[in-house]
Length: 344
Ligand code: AMP
Ligand code: MN
Ligand code: MN
Image (cartoon, rainbow, N blue to C red; front, side, top):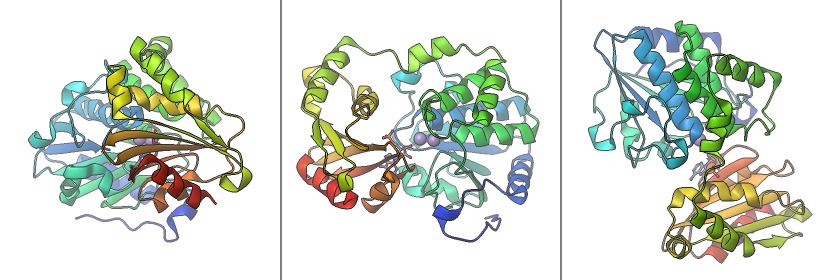
């Protein structure tokens, strides 16, 4: 396995992006794939706009370079989530059981730790692997690391890599990268939205990407049943002003029974946290989404007073300072109690 030394120091102190050596190693590794060679692209389980947009945008770029075979995959499925239907490059997606066992090169996108690759984590043992990511909590589990904790989305790193490979942006690549950027920045509202982010967005839009169409598709489309489901779930929200050392916690939960009552699929719940986190009386917000009898996908957000990635990591998950998550086990009140305890 090719390995490039990374700057030393605790993960959380590493705020700079990839070194010139790391960029050069990544470009060399990609260019070294022989004609007809197999390049495998992976992203994290339950993929979001940044994971899929970064992976497929890069995949299309690699296809433009030509000469290599390209597969894209994530653990647990082969479909685009409904909110991302129409994303270019979806034809590159293969089911997990079809993924090559012996690729020449593997790149993974928006993956902070090998566990987020589930059943596909073993593919990282390919002769060369490149981790492309922007999580400060990245565990640097590959051979070459393009990790920029200062990047608003993994797609920002991808755009840098495509530039260095000499791949010109076209409207399809740009649509993938724009969806990644607009989802991870919360439509350019979150703290990592720098002037450079808007400059990258401008480059993407200049190719002909249609931002209004994308926004309607990705953020503003929901079945009527989901609108009513949100009503029921928001109605049972709990505000705890004294939690999180007095900064306040607001939380709610959605069960599998709720999904059945309103005849909805789990994906509709991804947007729920955005309605809960509006609560001005709480710095920290939290949504528990039931995935099995005693298992919950937990989403956490902070307005700035609390590092929720610390809480998520302590409870077995990960994420960013202001947006993090983990898998909670037990009854909902027990999961909330574990969060409360970590927050205090
Ligand atoms: P979400 O609340 O699902 O939108 O996730 C927010 C962020 O938390 C994501 O960008 C991930 O980085 C991280 N995250 C969510 N769930 C997990 C998990 N089970 N394990 C590790 N990181 C997670
Ligand atoms: Mn992600
Ligand atoms: Mn991301």
